[in-house]
Amino acid sequence: MPQPARPAVEAAGLTKAYGRTTVLDGVGLSVAPGTVFALLGPNGAGKTTTVRILATLLRADAGGARVAGFDVAAERSRVRRAISLTGQYAALDEQQTGAENLRMVARLSGLSRPAARRRAAELLERFALAGDAADRRVGTYSGGMRRRLDLAAGLVGDPSVIFLDEPTTGLDPRSRQAVWDEVRRLADAGVTVFLTTQYLEEADRLADRIALLDGGKLVAEGTAAELKQQVSAERLDLTLVSPEAYEEVAHALGHLTVRRDPATRTLGVTTDGRAAHIRDLLDAVDPDRTLIERFALHSATLDDVFLKVTRDG
Amino acid sequence: MADALTHAATMVGRSVRLSSRNPDAVITALALPVLLMLVFVYLFGGAIDTGGGYGRYVDYVAPGVLVLCAGFGAGTTAMSVADDMKGAVIDRFRSLDVGGTAVLAGHVAASVVRNLAATVLVFGVAFAVGFRPEAGVGGWLASAGLLLAVITAISWVAAAFGLLADSPEAAGGFTFFLAFLPYPSSAFVPVDSMPGWLHGFAEHQPLTPVIESLRGLLLGRPVGGSPWEALAWCAGLTAVSVAAAAALFRRRTS
Image 1 (spheres, rainbow over the protein chains, first blue to last red):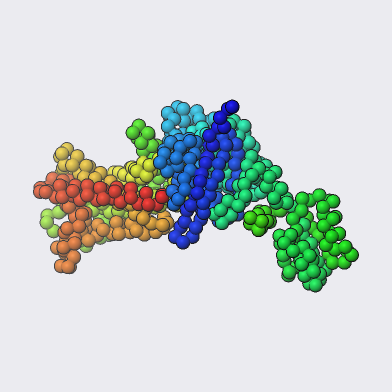
Image 2 (cartoon, each protein chain N blue to C red):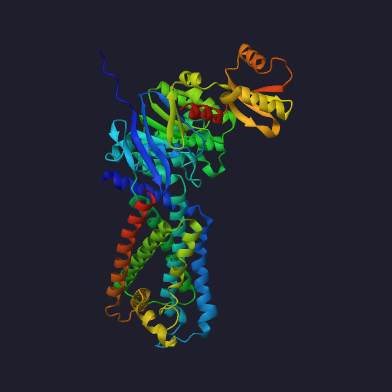
């Protein structure tokens, strides 16, 4: 029987606190080599802290992790040689050109001067930054161009594990698509990608496995399909005709509601979005068709997912 | 080791390039020295009697202006260090396993380059307005070595302050005293002309032996032990600042 490959990233009991604020509270996870793993969570959940610990930039107070087979605390340099980190904010010099930035990173990765020049040219080409853009200062780049250059800088040293901290936050749809395409290309090439995101859709599209992080704890983990079984992907908002109707329906739905807003007499219920389910639900709640004024279907937001997961968990 | 050298060399190249593209740094390095020289010689010089047989005030003041420029340049260095530390770029360097010493060495090297440019300009202006040093080859070499030592020391002090500050603005403020330090010394006026309570400080602060040595060496006068005293100060300040900078860098990045 073939041995299962060692995980590219494995962590157990990661804990980090700043003063009295616990940021991470015993996070454990495992990522198979060559897969895309998404750490999904709202702002302040501890995503960046997790990534910084795994990328050796921050020490955990407790717990440990191995990345690319090396211990992040005891074998920092070996981990650093195997990984790259592209953070939320472009880690580039605005007063250097795109080509200068990449050549600098290549030299720092240990390439000779000519090899650095070749590698920079190759990456500029691959990320559609060749020609005029290559010799412009990064300060003149658009947000999308910066992110692409930042990604390119992360690939200079041919890392086997790539950490992307919120790679598409603040990008326009076209730039977001370009980043997604690149993540898929990397995964196809056998690179392990560990990304963080606030967007369910992004995790769903890119990741083989998704972990939900909330308040420094992992609250759910699995494939997108597995998670969707736990969390309905859509939310049905019902607006009731009167405060009395609101109370009545809220009572009838009980713990099924994921959103309550008495001011607008609106109740949110998770659903899988199928017409049959919605029809049944409306009939069950309002058989006489007098209580519900209108309804609207929304894609479930991360808030809905967390409400559901944290309540069930 | 080879890695560390490549890292340091790459960071030096980066910092020099960034400096040359930073208008503030360029003005501080190139325009300020010229203005300071002219201000001291033409605006203040006429009213200052340095005694002791210095024919022209420019002969007396040139070393002081050189050191003053290094003090002003320190602000640029501290700000550029602080700027790096607040940005994401430092994470990139760390994830490439570039050590703090290499990053700071880049800033210090750029600072030395800026200051050497300033020094050349100050000498140029000084000559133009009548500075006539009488140093031999030995005196010039000794002066150059001492200037390099004091510039390096001030640059490392500035780098350490850049790490101590939370923001580039604060870093600029921290180095204000470096730009002020030459005044209570023999840089611009003889210490004897200052109030008595200031004599102790003015005579024993680190810049006084530096300035006395430079003045003596350039004008071909006896300097006694002051160059050694100056070098000891520079070596001590550099050593303390390098150690403090390394410790601060570790604290900032853990």
